[in-house]
Image (cartoon, rainbow, N blue to C red; front, side, top):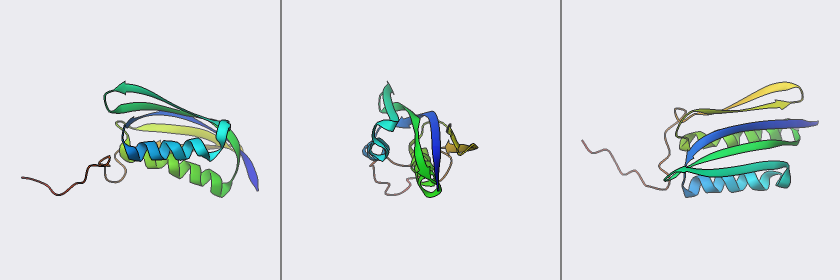
Length: 113
């Protein structure tokens, strides 16, 4: 079974190849049915606005939520994407506190004390 999924939100992210890869994945997800808009806000950071709607299966909606949630490692501050899937509220946190912070392509070799 599939249902219409509308989702929207804005998040500030560090600019790096890993984020660009996720944004590319979002752009390819459903073509013109979703807007992926980025604006440079400060050096090495962007503001992402993601919005749109399309038909998804439950698994497809979960996959989209997971892709958006994976941006949390690169977020400069907490954000939330909200949506409506088949009449039910969906909330996707984009939280830098979830998991370990990403290094944006910079290898972490150890801690110097």
